[in-house]
Image 1 (cartoon, rainbow, N blue to C red):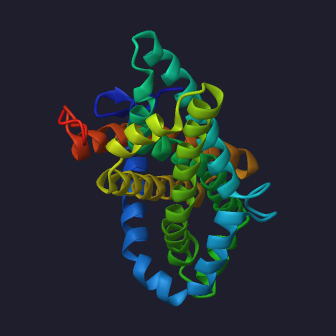
Image 2: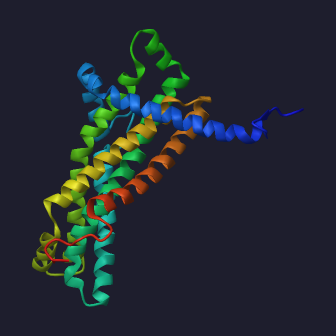
Length: 282
């Protein structure tokens, strides 16, 4: 069977490239429409937004398992920061700088570990739930039914989820940040036996409100990216239940890779290629 050429190349060669660019354009347009409808969705569907905030934070049988995202963020942040404290103390102790572990805790937890860990927890718990929910509604024609009843599906289903994630991520992230600080202090002071006064001195010397604000801004930006990516894949899911599963996997991979790239760019933008250390004059 002859293959119809496209621009001088076989269609089976050019079709994946064309489909890739078409998908990028579809998702980019989708993201713009979601953000454009965000203010009106908050005003019009505020009850739905409040319901979604509760589901994101504390969980429900239909979307989140266990204790909700707040428990996952707290646990993941605590475990990751415990490792920071243990390995950081061990590494600094090799060169005789173990008293400065508190400095490393304030720097690493605030600028990098806490935002990234919170975003991964959000993607794994909330983002995949959004993809599965919207994908199931797409393949069962529920989204088309909403449009038939004159209910705009994109503002009602996606913009409300964006607003809920934007509001929820702030207290969720602050809980994760507190868990990071507490876990590192526990590991260094109570497990490794360092003086609490020494640890607190260097910790408070380097921790600044500006760093905390930038760290929170990182978490909010990551939440926006994760919600857009996962809702986009779910909204355009095809191929039945198997297609919804593939969409969830692709959304998770895309969001995590995007978050790591954006994290590097934001770190450079906020603190520069040669970041200064407050309180040390460096």
